[in-house]
Length: 521
Image (cartoon, rainbow, N blue to C red; front, side, top):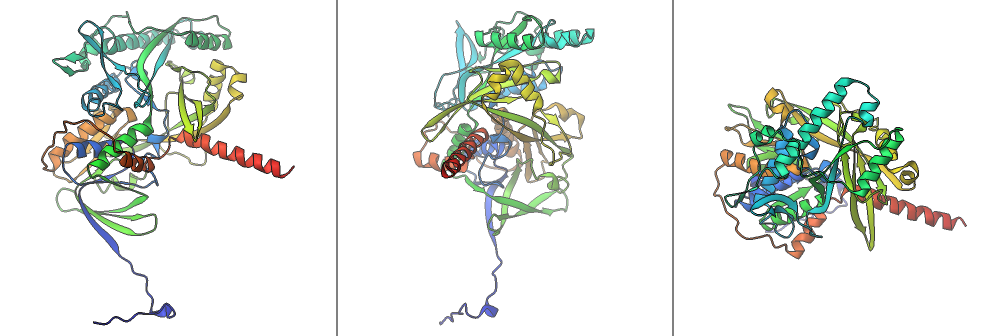
């Protein structure tokens, strides 16, 4: 058999080949944030299914998962809400973290139950320089009746509501993490249930604790409003700062060691739906950054995306409304304080939180503050032309740290957009994470709600997946021992923590400007 080579000197004979790669795996996960990563890792650890994770960004964890303040929530911020569901979700997720992750990731997951008095155990962060969680607690500052919130208001109802919120905070936190509930039950970690937490009416909170730094911050804040030092409830919470990049890198490495593949820079173009009977996905069509198209088939499709998912809601017959919420972040370098704290207020303008983080850029170490208002500004129709307002954050920072201290730092701001689903069923509105599937379909939709919920989201998604496809369950008894090469590959896949990117970019710009100034001399 002979072949004839067609020379490129005859362009009229050349045609562009258009082809689409076809691939089959057991499970395709669309979305490479913390939800997609944690579901892939947990499923791979407990099965022998072939799994592929797709993400549209160049690296995993590029969007909300890598932009937030790195706050591990155990419920403190939500302990004052009239509805305790979000607080309970935080408590349950902590239980799942300890039961499902602390033993397997023994060198990384450094939260576990510890004995605080004979035969009485409560959760705690175990100091570990290489751990996921930093031994740097978040102090909750709750105002009392002589605080600026009440002094400036003059409304009796504000004082009453503040007292109600204070009582909720003290009661719920004491019951969950104080001296009321033993987390070790029959050899297992067991969180308190809803009835226990809501049934406790005591106001003696063993978690009350302050520091000289916190006292000085509160004194400066009150002085700004012309008040003498007011009384505050200061609680040392189990909330802490966490290494979000480290968590995602470890989970990706664990997944890769079990055969999970990750593809970044992939955009889903279309869902091919079998519309006869119950909705089922036959294939998804997507393309890479280089334009090469791909058709993916699977037993099950898991959607963990928020951004760009609106167009698929009707195809999948999901009765949910997509809502995007914006949050402003301010980076201050060097750090303004060495203490993490959050002010919980009944007034939106007084909400404020400060986190301190460390990062290394080359051989240089940086310590910086991350400032936010501990809440999201909801906006169904986000206008991309207008930036989210950072002035309230800067105002609060001035009140706590002083104007000179604040503006002597390198300051940068950015915004984070978080996606939430609001179900048309009223019952689902209060839940902080969301999982939806149809027993006769082959897809699952997941929204984590918060990064901190990843243990529960992974576990509950796994349980739901077991009802949708048949597979043999595998029990992993060993502990995770990271392979150096796999960790290096996983590290390349994960985006740098966004505030760190901001500092690096600022360093580069400063170096360029210095060089330009020298060249003009």
